[in-house]
Length: 360
Length: 96
Image 1: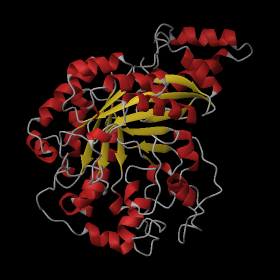
Image 2 (image 1 turned 180 degrees about the vertical axis):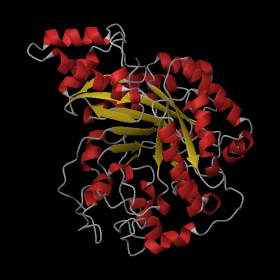
Image 3 (image 1 turned 30 degrees about the vertical axis):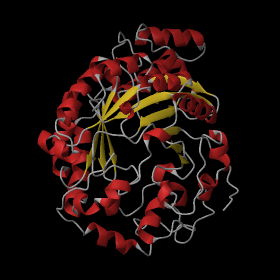
């Protein structure tokens, strides 16, 4: 499926440093089969990847996982990002990250910290994380981030168990000293897909949540930035996933595989290249997986002739495959998709069953 | 919320930790990097932002720009500076 589209300059690199994580969040977007520690890229390879990314135009690197602090060389990795000229963003659970390590990361040039918080109510938060005491540790580390003068984003993944406490969660983010809060409705991939029935909110809950976020934005304007990730099972149009396939972002897995998005491995038949064998530039420009859905040549109707095709890029390829069984189909979240009714059927399946916690 | 008209001429704007102005060849110019955000900075914005060091007051920045860009009216420069600074402060990208 070669296309004529020239590769644009990517902006962001999601560096999944490890899949290891002390938490078991049921909405984790990591794959069900996790990369093992023995297969993780070493420090020098990450440093090379960062230099190659910067050369391609990447401006920001998101150090993610799993829990990045599970890596003993995190400080060296942060320093390498800085040396490559990248803006570094640490996406952490805060569990297993000590104040001492955090301070070393700040000295190494870390630009920004994002801490996940599971709920404003501590008991519920610990239950969702599958880790007793996680909530208290997160709050303590958030205070350290602020004390060191680093900007703090609090990320709150929203689902049926906490969706009615968005106001309290934003209050918590403010009290922790965050300058930014992300209200992220669960996206159903990986472990989240496995737990969909246990996580899915109702349409009424989602509508109230969206209105609530608008209200809080106006109320706290200038005090805290509130960003929201939309609940796409209740949307009319699909999300422009990763800003368009192979257009803005690059994802490198712990073992060095390079993906157009973190869920892309669910699509059968895509050939992913690895940074151990290819330069990031070659992978971005020429690897089969990145070329597969770049541009618009691959599209079918209704996307092909749609006036929004350069706006939402047909939505999410993984979702099209996972729900419709065809990665070239329109994302069924779109009301123009002939399979749109499937989404409402799936959203209607809501069961209060025990979470299937992600394993590590 | 920062009111544009309310920015004191004595305020000393500066980029907070976590906000950096960098030049990137591949992206074709100057960009302001912030948490989960990237802003392309045009020529005017770059000249203003380079002077937001926390040491120069708004008045001093305007004076300096008026000296550097002879012919541009001071009121116009002042309006540009206050508009940019106010907008960025609102987004938590600048401290006053």
